[in-house]
Every structure is written in C-alpha cells, then in structure tokens.
Length: 111
Ligand code: AMP
Ligand code: ZN
Image (tube, rainbow, N blue to C red; front, side, top):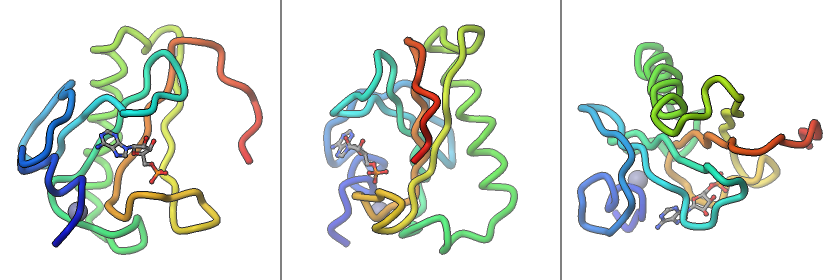
C-alpha cells in the first residue's frame, strides 16, 4: 500500500522519531503548526478513526500522547490532542494519527 505513515512506521521513509513502542511511532510533524507538533501514528494501518474499534489501542494512543507531551516538556504548560477524520474534519493523510500541539498558548477556537 502506498501510505506515507505505513512507510514511516516501517522505517522505509525518513522521519524525526520522538518515541516508539510496539504499536505506535511518535514523530515530529513535517509542517508544524506550533512550537511542538508531534503525531502519534499507529503501526497498523487504519484509514480513519472510524476504521478502528480496538479500545485498547485507542486508549494506548492517549497514553502515548501523554508520554510524548512529557518528553517534549509541554505536559505542565499544556497541549492539545486532536484526531482529524475525513474531509471536513481536515484529514489529509489517510492513516490514523493523533496530533499533539503545544509550546505556545493555543487559540480557543476549535473549528
Ligand atoms: P491530517 O491533516 O490530520 O491528516 O494531518 C496530517 C499531518 O501529517 C499534517 O500535519 C502534515 O504536516 C503531516 N505530515 C504529512 N507528511 C508527513 C511526513 N512525511 N512526516 C511528518 N509529518 C507529515
Ligand atoms: Zn498506512
């Protein structure tokens, strides 16, 4: 499958890895929208959040987001965790991932 995040997870494409375990790879976003902008990417391919019913995996994704925020030093100052789904949700890469943003005050606007 021609999926950039599958390639990153398989180390077939370059990325800046922040954290990794059996089920996830956390990388720095190539086009950061805040001083810290990381992506928690599942190693297994799910096209969108709608395609994943694995409660354990989805819970672990949040734990991984917390770990990444701690590692980046934005846990106490604060951060935002976002999953965009499908076109109107703003999803551009069709492989499940969670954004973690922080390092400056984020705007209150959500949409
Ligand atoms: P989304 O719009 O929610 O699908 O988010 C996709 C994110 O992936 C965007 O913030 C992109 O900047 C980021 N992105 C796309 N390709 C890469 C890549 N090769 N390495 C790191 N981040 C990427
Ligand atoms: Zn994929």
